[in-house]
Image (cartoon, rainbow, N blue to C red; front, side, top):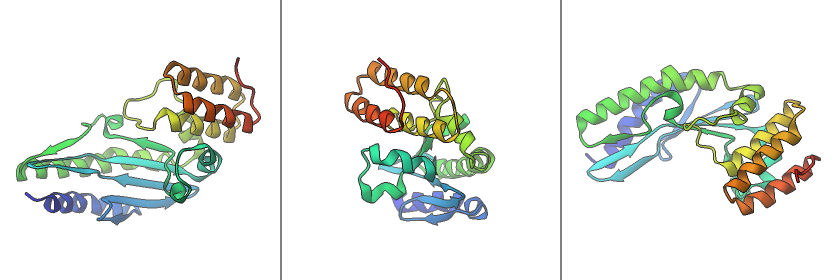
Length: 209
């Protein structure tokens, strides 16, 4: 099998349910995108060529424009890429599915595309449809225990979580900021700490001692 054969099979298997749900696809980028009120949903299908084995998985991302408008000035993302930033990145494990598919032959390819289509229709799409409001995104970002299937890294979710909490009118913003700052210190995220402290001050919150 050639990489293009795998790419085309995966893309076509997912295309029908995605297009029916309002997504537009890019075969070159192996992704589908739909605009929703206040943001964007994206499904990506990264494909790696370790010939004779091909590896791919499904990733869903959610962008909330109101959150990104607050956090992007404090991010490491180059300005020209701001419009493609994501607020949440969710992997297959979040939906109790395998992290990736490894394909070595036609039989494994057929299984992988069938399982991927079923995963999107049965689990990912309903989750995306239920994640169009700010409150649901805020709960995901600031969950007390982070699910291993949520791929958004600390450098992003601390800023997004605090911004979302502010937009939702939470009254415990100082405590939430302290929680994230403590996590950064525990993980020795020195550069992130400096940017996060500036972010907290910009939001008019008190920095913890």
